[in-house]
Image 1 (cartoon, rainbow, N blue to C red):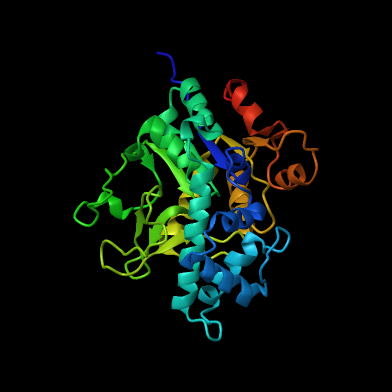
Image 2: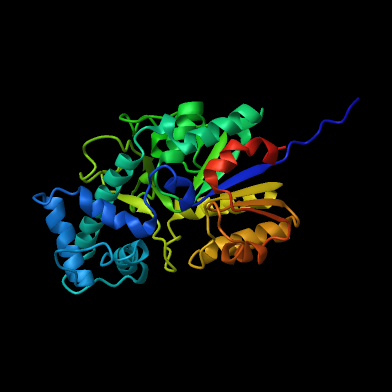
Length: 341
């Protein structure tokens, strides 16, 4: 009797570069793009204008170079919560209001940039994997991006119910969530772990639940409320900075699952992720994965034409068996078959 050949455990780890090719702005460009989309006569515009004036001393006209970086903006919003100290004159409730409006504008910008999923590179990427692997339902995805381009691509090809987000979503309990109920995914389904949260996640600080919401409606600026206890919820996104709030219980579980997934992996494909120094928790998690099972097959897909420099060096400090590919996400998709062999 022939011994069954064990299929390799694969993890695809995506960063901002994987969404950028589909029109999602990089962090450095996102605020400028958002500001361009706001109606200058709207309430939202007056609120964001006030936030920039108070917290960054910026007054109109604000040019592209004047905008704060995304990690600065999110850091300013998250820091009071991290150290449990409010800004003078700006309560936690007021900061949350700024945060809700700013993320509403970000969501609007992201939605505008990624409206036709079937034409996206992420959709082509997922479809190529599905066409070339008979164990597609067991593939693992980890993303640092909080847009929904990858989520939407996977759901088009495999239905949303078959995606395991690694969270015990409120949507799985129909007695609470009647607007957007989902069946709980079965073991063995595709995993999509969003380590920095998502613009489609709503978090309740009272019952610590997370609810998945539609991001294609016209109510993006409205306050949402927990389906279990009626408490106002907030968009769950971890700021791209050194000060990461990973103490949210569901997120902590997500990071534990990602760590185990990477430790178990035979092959890890990094796409559009520069392994920034601010992501120290990721460095620790990846090094643990390498120490647990050394000499994994690691492929790093970088921007086309990039010289083998800083990014390759960062990965080489963690892994021993690296293939560095400065060919861009688009070219990697076109030739993905040879790397999956």
